[in-house]
Image (cartoon, rainbow, N blue to C red; front, side, top):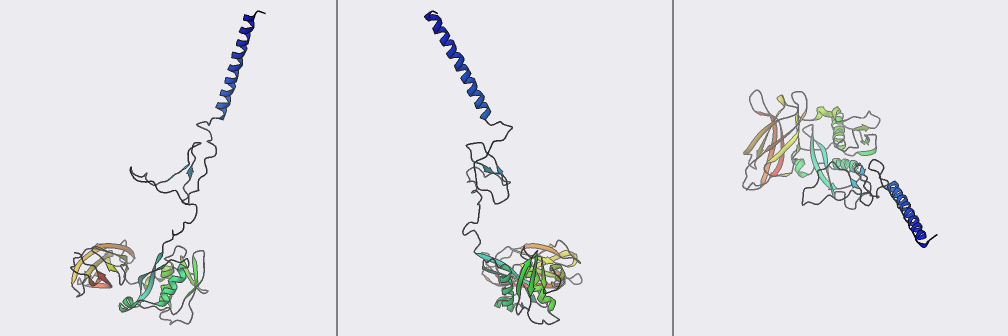
Length: 311
């Protein structure tokens, strides 16, 4: 065979082998590339969100993102930090605000306490009930009927409470109502059982509420204008009126609203009233029903507060 023929044959074999190698490489590359409709494979590991929102798989080489129902941050604002996988030091609020139910004129009356945070919230609340009202509350007529109280367990939404001693039969239900209304503010407690008695909830003691309850503000609060008054009421045509009085008893402002239910049923209400005052001083917020007979205030609840100046 001539030298020219040998060279031609070698070049043909080289080209054929190169084409085969390229074809094999392409087939392998296609087989390894991810399909648009198939699985993307394992995404890069990220901390699982604590909110229960699913994580979205990401393309290889890109971080996974967390799906969220929150709106996308506006331009120029920073995105929220990634969710934590566990408790963060210092994330628990330093203070806890408790709603306490004392007794006033033979009816339940709410107030509040702010105390250092604790995991034993039920025990703390009962301890505050037993401690009784502060001087401002006592001056407004609040008392406690609990000489002692102890939570023995909380299970399946029922708190079992021991009330030592034999209560006065005339105040036994009021004493229990103080405990029930105070403990059921917590999501872990729906009812309270006293010893072997059947568990009871707020509805079982609703008859011990006054016609109008003011839950905000409470006795001793410092308020600014306009002040929002809220609570619950069972009054004629569900109409609740409020007014603001200064230290001399002079009426500064009035307003009214309609509760969500009334005339035989209890509903929530919320009303805002503004006032003008040139200096800070003691004052009173009053919530009442206007008599259908003569227009006078009836079923009146007074809340002594400090009125901030408006200038």
